[in-house]
Amino acid sequence: MEEKKFVEVRKDEYNIKQFVKRMFGKGKVSKVRIEYTPVGEKIVVSTHKPGWIIGRRGEKINELTEILKKKFKMENPHVDIDEIMHPEFDAQLVADDIALTLERFGAMKYKASSYRALGKIKNSGALGAELRVSGKLPSDRARSWRFAFGYLKKTGDAANVVDRAESVAQTKQGIVGIKVAILAPGVKVCDQISIDEDFMNEVKKNATFEEVEETVKKIKKKRKVTKK
Image 1 (cartoon, rainbow, N blue to C red):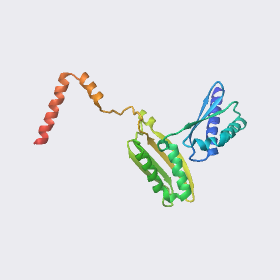
Image 2 (cartoon, rainbow, N blue to C red; image 1 turned 90 degrees about the vertical axis):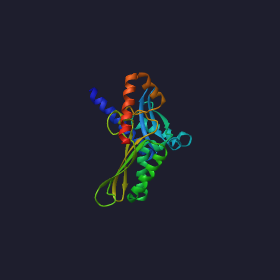
Image 3 (tube, one colour; image 1 turned 120 degrees about the vertical axis):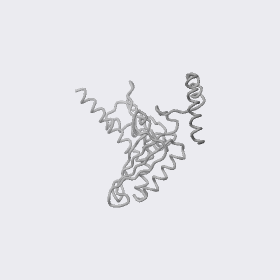
Image 4 (cartoon, rainbow, N blue to C red; image 1 turned 30 degrees about the vertical axis):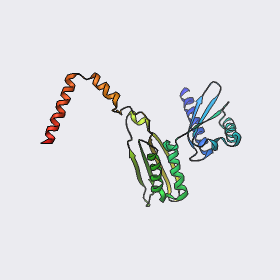
């Protein structure tokens, strides 16, 4: 019984998240998070356009609250807005933006829209990014195109800091899938080592005289070999 309740709760959460995204439209909402508090349910909507979500005098927020009460039978839902300050580092917003461009101008614009999105991410200072566009592009056979730059971890614990998202564009040529992965600047990667003055001072403190002497000898031998 407990397992069934757990599955039902997760199912309801998924339906609520999908409904909120459909209600405000593609490209407006990045993520929807549900938190349970003693007072009631808290629905946190992450967006880069808070005014669009709130509406005039909070009309859209009130409308969403009433729907959550009636349709999803929530006792006391409270909708909160989490503003995204850098939308170019949000994988979901980037994927939705490419999907909207393809739906508006056609699937043949996949290269222009992908390079434009990749340029924005790169110019904003991201450490790395990867875009994958799959579908009948540009021929009748389905193909997958990859656009990438920089450093991007794909396996291990370091891959968890990469923001990943997917979106779908419905074009005249057919369905086009978009996958986006972004490594934002300032993210701490567990296996990344930065060599600075503090690091060198630590090495000097912990290293013994014999270790330093051996390192100097190796460097001198390498220089002699290169001179010959």
